Length: 261
Picture 1 (spheres, rainbow, N blue to C red):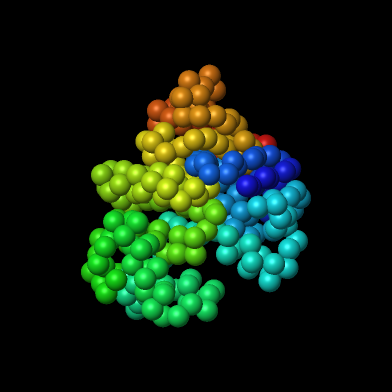
Picture 2: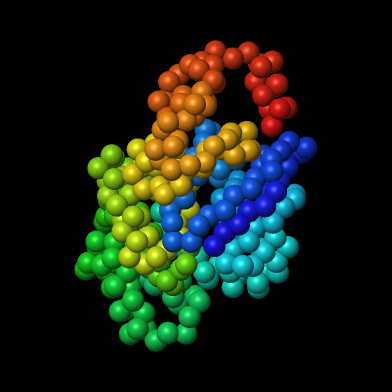
């Protein structure tokens, strides 16, 4: 479904992505993880066509999006949905109008049909009857659900998730994880989740990819990652303040680390 080959991105001679090779299987949930500055958000921006790599290719559903025209990229974007970190709802629109937005922008469907689709999508995320609510009238977790309903409005093959549990309490975050699982299985969606939440990753992932310094450090199932022998992976999982990444660091060591990326 998605194949990334030799992906490199440099900013001012610094490699943010350094030779990424990755296959994301169709119909599965792939979680991309790593510490701050590891390149996971930059990788996501490449996958959705917001950045152009310095080198390499990105195949989505058999089409290389690197160097593609804007019209061509717009056609590819119709194949995927996006759940943004902050939900990114339009506060001046109702819940139903937010979900309907991609349908109005990208289809010629009649309003009656759009309203039916909106109702179905909201039901799928557990928000039956919320069409007429305004974003300020619902909780943060509900806003994420609305954003998810909008992301699947066009029946995408792929959904990209940027920190889906960010800013949510543990129970609500677990509910969002369950929705990701349910929608991926019921709708046979290929899901790509960028997160730093370990509990979430182990709950939902078919495959976990850990990045460090712009490179893939390790990939595997949740069990394989938990049993990794890599000291950085184990520190990342446990959240220990000292280890492969030291608690105390000199400016010289920090600069050396940057130059090594």
